[in-house]
Image (cartoon, rainbow, N blue to C red):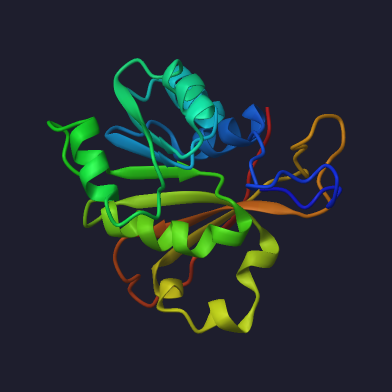
Length: 202
C-alpha cells in the first residue's frame, strides 16, 4: 500500500514491498509470536522473510499473482504459499489444504492493498482462531471516514502502533502519509480504549 507519486508509479494492483525495518519495529514490540501466522496478500514474501528470520516457525501466505507467489514460497521453511484470491469464498479450503495439520491461523501480519484494506481485515478475522490477533500496516487516515466508523469492525480494534518515520515503498522516496500497524483482536474488545504507542526503530 502506498500513496506516494500517484499516477505513473502507482501499481495497478496496489502492490508495494513492505520495508524490512517497519516489520522489525512491530516484532520488537510484540516479542515472539508462537503459533501459525498468516500473511494475506503476501506479495513476493517481504513480510514472510522477516517473520522467518525472527524465528516464527509456521507461516502461510496467500498471493494472487503467480510469480509473486512463487517468490514468496522461497521465503517459507515450514508452511506454504497459496496462489489465490484472499477474498475468495474458497479461502478456508485453500488454507486447510496448504497446512492440513495446523488448523486456523493464530495471528496475521499484512500490508494490504489500501482499496481492499477493510475487506482484507474482515476476511482475516473470519479465518483466524477465535482469539486470534492481526496487525495491518495502514495509513493513519484509515481510522477516519464515516463508512468505516459505522462498521462493527471497530469493536475489535485493540491497538495502534505508529511508525516513527514514513516508509518508502518505491525506493528512495518516503511516502506522503503517516503509517501505523493497527491491531485487531478476533473478539469484541471489552469496552476499554485501544492501545496507542509510537514504535521504536533500531
